[in-house]
Structure formats: C-alpha cells, structure tokens
Image (cartoon, rainbow, N blue to C red):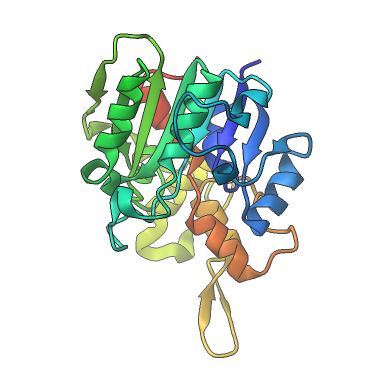
Length: 279
C-alpha cells in the first residue's frame, strides 16, 4: 500500500483524497489533533515543522529520521497568499513553504501533493516552482472548484502534483468548464427524499447528496440571540463522512473553524485525477 506523510494535516481532507496508509502527519492545532487521533490512532504526529531544521536544503535535519513514505501531502498555511488577508507572500512569517521544501529535499518521496488558495498563483507560487526546479522536480498544477466535483459552493483551490524526474518541467493544466455541467446531476433514486423544503437550493442539495451518499443535516439551529449554521451541515457541505469533525468533544466554534480551514476530499480527488494521479 502507498505510504503517505502529511504536513499541515488539519482534519486530513487532502489525505482522504490521496488514500494509502498515513504513516506520519504534522499538526499542532489542538482541535485538529483530537480529530486525527480519533481517525488515525496509529499515525505518528511529528508536531511543529519549524522545529525540523533551519530551512537550508541539504543540511542534516531530522526529516530523514522519519519512516520513509511514497507521497508527501502539504496544505501549507494560506494566510500569506489569501486574497482575504494582507498578502505579504514570502515575507509573511506564516509562510512555511521552506519547511515543506526541506522535507521534500531530505525525504525524496516519489510524489508530492500540494494544496493552497487560488491567490497563491499570483503571489509566492513562482518561488515554489523555482525551488522544485532546483531540486530537479517537475510539477503540474491547476485550480479546481468544489462545485466542479458537485459541491453546493465554489471554494476554488490550487492543487499541485510534483515528482523528481530530473527534467524540471512545469505545466499549468487547464480543463474545460464543461466538466462542471456534467457534475451537476439530479438526485439519484432513493436520495434527497427530504429536500422539498430546500426551495431554490434543492438542485444543489440533491446533487451533493448523491455525491456524498447521505442526506443533508438541518442547516441551522436557533441560538440565544440568532440563528446559527450547524457544524454538521458544514461537515456535509465539505463532503466528509458523518462524524468526521463533529462528535469528538469540540465546541461548535472549534468545529466550524476546523471545517472552514479544511479540504473537500471530492474536490481534491477530482484535481488529482485531472492532474494525472499519484500512483
């Protein structure tokens, strides 16, 4: 079975799309660690990546002490590149790509799968491609929306597959938006039977119900002073199995924060398919 090492793992959405055996991960957020422990109890959590050397590729650092893996996944922090932030790019102290680069350099996996916000394309992504090229790696990348996989929200994300073939080719992969139309299916027989109250959203809800294989939970609940979205509904919107993030003792705010920072597995799986896969 393919062996996977995961950096900035979150709740493991990118790793669900990649598949294989998650050998080790890197996560420091307490809520995320709770979720990972529940679903991957045998996986080693190496903790803070900034403790793994001084970001000078080629130095002797602890990365090569970890169990060998075939694939490294990394959804490194998006705040330096996000259009909703200050966009400081590589000058942002939260830019942790250099640690991903060092891990790749030391471990030398067969494949690397990266994920980030679309805004990374215009800020800092040239550095990523240059670093990969200096290591003799080729890369293919493209932007896929969650709605391309059938989700009822857009959520465009940049996905990258890289491998060490020595040719240092880089290629942006573009595909026809016609794929989006084919993914907008009506509900399958036996699905979406309780969707009459969704009104104008019925088609979108039924489509995603068919994709994820389960009915949508109630979207809101009444709080003391307002109506609030439920974590269970967001979990469904993110394409996760029921109880993947919810039901582990976290507060609703913690659950929503985790879900808001996560990866839609179906979206990532589609991106990997279009980019040529990781096998």
